[in-house]
Length: 54
Image (tube, rainbow, N blue to C red; front, top):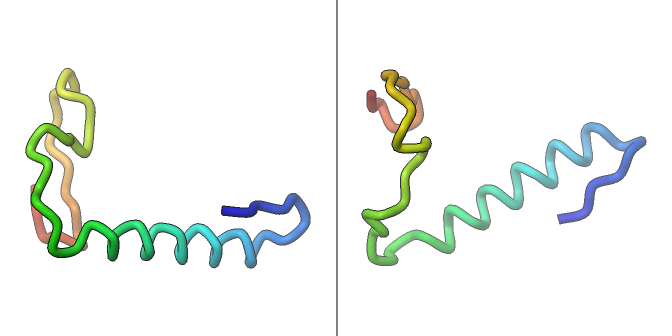
C-alpha cells in the first residue's frame, strides 16, 4: 500500500483496493472465531450496514 501526501483521491482508491483485496483473500477461508471487530472490553452495540448486523 503506497500513500502519497499530495494525492488524496488516489490514496482513497488505493486503500479501497487494498481493503477489497484483503477481504477477497479471506473468502472461502475458515472463519477465525478468535478475531473480533472491536476490543472485547468495549461495551456497546454497533450497527454494521454492510453486514446488516448489530
